Image (cartoon, rainbow, N blue to C red; front, side):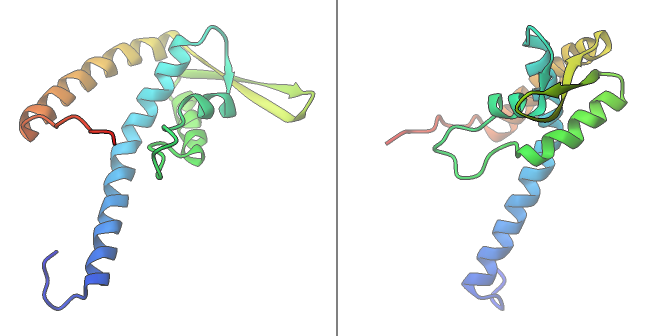
Length: 137
């Protein structure tokens, strides 16, 4: 990105675009894993907004790791693959709500994906040489 023909503003915009692309690609698999985790630990089926609220980022973050609009397509995809089931129920306070529950197949996938995540994160930490802890002010 050190192209001398680009202005500082253009270089910054390119860096921001690259960051957005990296976050989007990283988020794709993490969202599925996180959704399965939330539903695996839930005592009862949950609707999308409940799940989204549980997955919100710390208020200090300006860019959420997982955006609410991404959850619904991923929930539908997980359901389409038999990892979740859903049931639409009427709501007294608004439109009907779709409640999601994890299936046995989803629990099996969750266990496998956790192992994949652990192996991948160990590899990335090793390659990066460890990531220093964030320091808070």
